[in-house]
Length: 400
Image 1: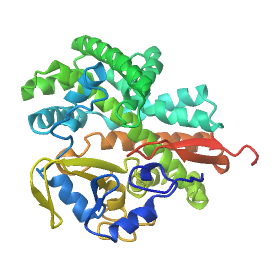
Image 2 (image 1 turned 180 degrees about the vertical axis):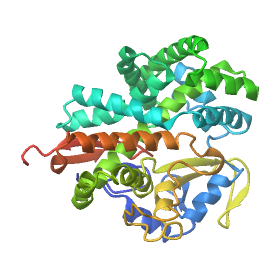
Image 3 (image 1 turned 90 degrees about the vertical axis):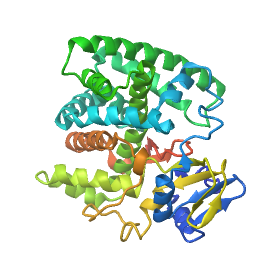
């Protein structure tokens, strides 16, 4: 798990250990300017909170609502309607609808689907091999949410493939062939969800039927935006949940005593796993940073900012700020008043946090109960990403 590159704001998320770097940033200016990358960096909890709450800081630059690399294609059409990539009514209305539908989602049903698909996928993949484990972590959230959204069992593998292709275009690191594959996947996803929405008319108790009812009651009649945000729900679930599950596995692998206690304490295990996942979301965040774009002259942390400037918001650094969490560099399952920035804050807080955490909890319960992992043989690197911390597992084959 060694890396030769010097850590910086662009590669920190996938670095072996970015947290000393984040600590050094917190000890510097409240809002530091990174001349090499022409951006400001917010790393302290209070400054991160101020940026995320500021009406002058938007999720996209005014002059480029859709990334140039995907504008004009199906992936760009989806991106343009995503509530998390918009401000104003294009953000608040779909978020209100999505939150209303998600509040009605039975978490016990989510647990049931996770257990079912965890068993199925674990039997299909070589879980004793790192590649199989990594594939399991990416596919499981899509299989779970896909089944809840109405996809048939025999269509889930293809859905996971489409989602893997689609999310690659959301990264500035994507290549032209990946962007082309993302457009094709986006077209397939749009057609599939369009059909599902039509079919949901005969199933009034389904999630999609409830979502459409919420939309009607809110006066949100944009069919393209509805499709886009369903795809967006899956795409966020895909990477954030894979990262949260993977980082929870790493936390246990590095703490054999905790792993043993969880395996032995069957009565308290469900709550302890829930506590672990909630703490890992803070301690080793699957989403390490986000960006904000200044839309008008403003002041953040005493620093005057001009329209067009960029702020990299280090969510993971804020999670480790002692002013937000006492003894922040330690993993504490019983942490009181845990402050977590991983899933955002204020108007752009992620509505799918409970889904990611519940799938992760149920998955870990399955992995501990079935003993399919050879914990002591696990090793990992991190998937190249500007903001996601998602482990890619392998095994030390010489160990036994």
